[in-house]
Image (cartoon, rainbow, N blue to C red; front, side, top):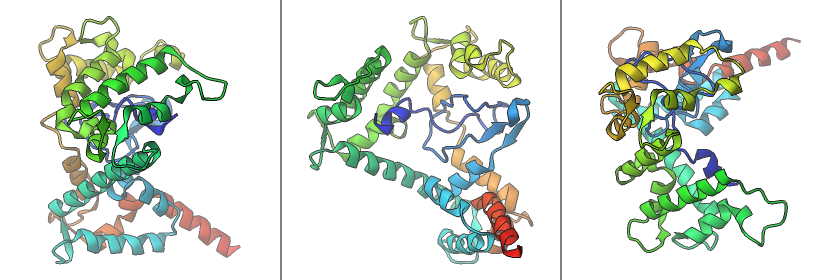
Amino acid sequence: MSSFLCFISFLLIISCYAGILPTGTQNDHKARVLDLPLSQQEHFTDLNNDKKVEHNTEYDHEAFLGTEEAKNFDKLPVEESKKRLGALFDRIDKDHNGTITKQELKDWIKSVQTRYISDDVQKQWIQMNNDSNNEISWNEYDKTTYYALYDDVPEPKTVTDQYLRLQKKDRRRFTKADEDGNGNLNKREFADFIHPEQSSRMKDLVITETIEDIDRNGDGMISLEEFISDIWDSKQANDTTEPDWVKIERENFRKYRDLDHDGKMNRKEVELWLMPTDYDNIQAETEHLFHEADADQDDQLSKEEILEKHDVFVGSQATDWGAELRIHNDL
């Protein structure tokens, strides 16, 4: 099945409103607040289910470097990691004055974020565009993704009701993304199809899909219990006792999401939840990195300050890997 199906529900990165909402997380906690992805990691992690929530540094590494580059840095010894971080500093410092401002860091993180989208679009475009022309038809996408529905696919086939529902949802999204209505998607339209969270014209469909995904009783709204069931499965967890982070999410629902306090989120409330107007994840990550590295608190980062905190920017695993290297050299 296409990697798109793993991404199908566009449930991206931000699992809490950082400093705005006091939320906790769980590894299987579905994050539904929409934005372009800074990282494939959860921003905060639950430590061994002991109810202690800790900032996840891997989120920072991927936000700063991008997912693939973060993996590359993880394999480097410390000195090489610092050397490459220094070279990145020179690229981020656009005015070449020897320091990085918050705006320059924001611009850099934004470029990393945008590159993720464009790279993902290109990868899936190549996978789906079977005739290598400038458009992808529904048949091309459908047969590549839902291949088990076709007669010429070898047995065994696996076709479930969920599979068919996903196909129906994709068909509707495909039609919405087809802006010129010609039945095919050009590359820009295809980007809106696989990343609807980044397209203003797909906004209404994103809201509709989210409600449909969570709304169990079909009333077009999301109740508190439906919301909790979506983020925590007590049966799968083999525990009927709610962890603290779920209790916090209940309180968040009542205080911050159900704005008219009728026990449900209506369409407008779902929109404000998914697409908050008062939260900028790039700004939040920039402020966090400055908080970690700006030793003299002058609202600028020198190369020395960044290299001193290289583990914050490019990965603590590099330090571990370097230590391993030194141990083997001493033997």
